[in-house]
Amino acid sequence: MNKQKKYGLWVIMKPVMFKIQIAMLLSAFAALSLIATLIVLSLSLSNIMQGTALEIFGIKLNLFNTIVLLAIMTTIAFLSRFYAFVVSHLAAFRLEQILRTNLAQHLAEVPLGYIISNGSGTLKKVIQNDVKALHTFVADSTPMIAKSIVAPITTLIILLVIDYRLAFASISILILGFIAMAYAMRDSEELRKKYDQSQNDINKAVIEFTQAMMVVRTFDDGTSSFRRYNKALLSYKENLNNWMKISATPAKLGMIILSPLPTLLAVLVTGIILLNSSQIGLFALITALFLSTGMADAMMPIMWLQNFIKKSQASALKIQEILDIPTLSISNKPQIPKDFYMEFKKVSFKYDNVETYALKNINLKIPNGSVTALVGPSGAGKSTIAKLIPRFWDVTSGEITIGGVNIKDINPEVLMNTISFVFQDTFLFQDTIYNNIKIANPKASKEEIINAARLAQIHDFIETLPKGYETKAGDRGANLSGGQKQRITIARAILRDTPIVVLDEATAFADPENEEEIVKALANLTSNKTVIMIAHRLSTIKDADQIIVFDKGKIVESGKHKELLQNNKIYKKLWNNYKKSTKWNLEKGESYE
Ligand SMILES: Nc1ncnc2c1ncn2[C@@H]1O[C@H](COP(=O)(O)OP(=O)(O)OP(=O)(O)O)[C@@H](O)[C@H]1O
Image (cartoon, rainbow, N blue to C red):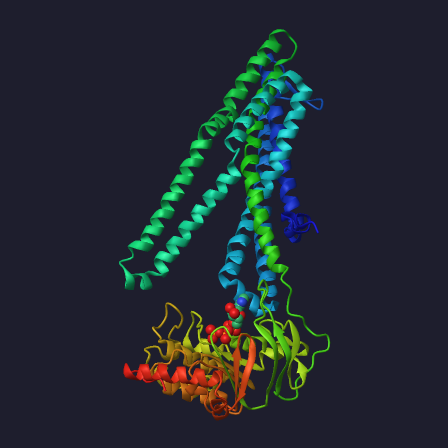
């Protein structure tokens, strides 16, 4: 498949193509009007110099009428140019809106795993920067493209009609100028790459320098990361200097050649020679003088337009790549599960672009209303299995059923409303605590929200805040501790009231002070639910109905706590390690058990 052809810049602009075409037509018309104005102007000047009256289409015009005509023509040229940009800006805003909506709608249908794997930062960059780049392209460049094609071609044709030697004089200067410019830009792609790379390095170094400040400061005074930043700056300067050195002189030379004066001189000298030998008339000379200087002016943008087109093309491809991510498959005959008995049947799973399987042939039954704990060493596949249930990713082979229905046959919305997640890394929006809880159920009443906060053991704390529930949460909001944030997210999950609850390291943030409250909050969240818990703190899962032990993507043991201890295998080892670590903590005075 020809990617370029299918995903080109012009393809992504299709929804606003009509507007863009209008903008380009108006811009081309403006360029033609300007040329026509210049021709009328040179006609009237040559007539004035020869003492005759201007005659257009057989109508004689006096000086006043000529000035009025010129004023009208200039106004038409100006207005068409103005409206070309108005229309192109309207097209740009519309395109931006369409692309952002399409991207947002598409991403809402893409498996969440894709967003987790690719990082929301990359997506944010595309939604913000690349869409903005296309906006700028449509708004500023499309009329320019039309002008830079129509104006030079028309001018050249007119010059050729007037006298080929005048056309030659004017074009030869232009060619010289463009040779110099092309020479200046000879390695520009390579140099630009290096320049972009060093700019990226600076950005990374700045982010590292600021974000890692806390970590860095605990080890040194920040000089090492500042050194990296400084190094990035020096390399940027070097690349820029290098680029300037290579291209500065020929670029300056090109600019001088392409400025109006050399063309004017060349056409003037050629024209006077031809005029003196009566090979051309005064009108021809004046027209050539007017038009030829405008030709370079109209062609100059081609240089940066080319660059602009390339960059916008890259942005279009990035946007298209996201729009091409396959969406979550939706069954044509969705079924509603009768209960919440869950089963993994021969489930294997492999992440994209990873050779090894993260899960291999998993067979697992999770009875309705039971508590199942997933344990195992780091990287064993516990989180992966939990994330397959709400279809963050789809299984590579095998199937997962809820109430006997393959989860792929459950409407994604229904599935999402069946499962709540409490992750170790909590996320709060830059909004009030009230809205941060309400998001779980926008229809919930105030009483329901407060009740959820109460059950999550966070209500009393919220009441102590100066603005109570109206306090802003999130990064720059209230200074909430990890445990407090966690309880807010538990309140959310309580408000959602889904029959299945997945807890991924939910007590990770608990300090002794918070632990009791979190455990209580979790007990309220999970009562009468089907619960899947992932935990390293084995004390929290001792009473689970079943404990599934994973290792290297496989289930290696399962049973109740006591049975597993008697088995004397991996779980016993994990338990002993856990006990040792808590003993160590106890010695340090931090009880976690
Ligand atoms: N988004 C991802 N893309 C590629 N590989 C991944 C991704 N997430 C996890 N993995 C890999 O899959 C395997 C299982 O990871 P998973 O996070 O499920 O393990 P875990 O048992 O939950 O570990 P931990 O206890 O450390 O959280 C690991 O080898 C991990 O490197």
